[in-house]
Image (cartoon, rainbow, N blue to C red; front, side):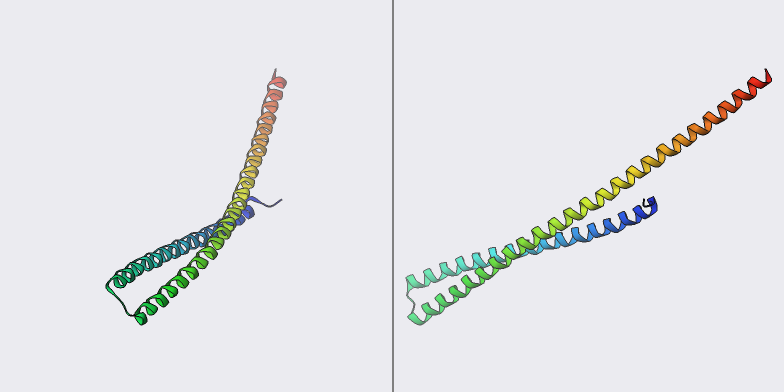
Length: 149
């Protein structure tokens, strides 16, 4: 069985892995959030741009300008679609990082429980040895007293 010092070293390494995976998960969540904000900004810009086009059309706009506006809206639609794909991929990465982190956390906790269990066994064994020693001393004292009587 591994010694407590070895188990503590392993626990320390596993905790470092856990912290690293936690940071990666937090970074993935932040990246997802930033991309969601970017999509929201793109969608809002698209809506504002469409309102501007609608206002220009009511005043009167030539065909060439209207086609340019429609092409730009198409580019905005494509950018929104690409951003949605990035978000979907980010969600998958985020979920994967979370699973990795939680699995590592479970592994680290299992090692800590093993350490606790081994420490408890050592305490029990130490207590038994002490009790055995006290019993031996008591019996020797009894024998000495009995022999003096």
